[in-house]
Image (cartoon, rainbow, N blue to C red):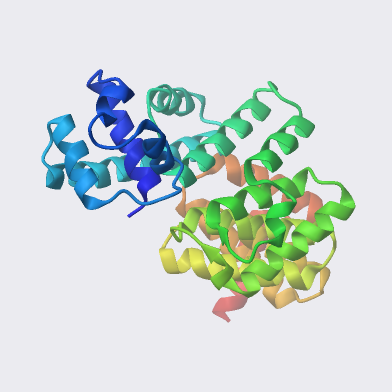
Length: 306
């Protein structure tokens, strides 16, 4: 059991019951020992959990059930907040943010995820510069020292991948290679296995390799992300991934794969019912390939039906 998460939950209930921290720990542990639990420096013995539960007036079994429920609720709320930030849905951002401001976030990893989302929110609202965004997020994960470690959480890898758009060239190449190595040895990434986070990281890798004109790597990471997204039965970022793959195949003169990727991109946009995004892609495709998207699809289908 994670003592840091549990003690954060105890703090949430303690505060809600208006019990001072001194009174809460009195007769159970020293305040210094309680702080060690909160920092995750040692585990809370089960007998101490019983005593804390008694002090709160909640049976231990019920306390642990509420703890798991609250972790799941907060996790979903933070996921929704992050997604609202990156899609810039202001009404949802405000709703989730108002709720999260009242929270003691139980899971340290989710707190890191939330802080990262707040950085993006401030960047989009022009409250901070790109340099400040970079500096804030390297502080969150202790970059570049983090790169020396053997294991990373998926949120740490997500934050590292966000730096690709802001690092200077030498740092970007080092970071990109390290992230690519992590996915070559996926056991190095530990965490919840969140498919949304994984897909976003892989999309960023495909995009960054595209900028470097390493089109074989674009296809590799796009295919990896597409495979995972389809396994999870999620549409998230599939339009971007198929489009990046289409561009890479086009540059490599693999016309059959280019046409198939572009066809899948079209299908995703229609299945997801994203007319505004479809218009955006129509403009991109005309610019990048000098073709009309609808005409291309008709010709592709005719070719397949022969």
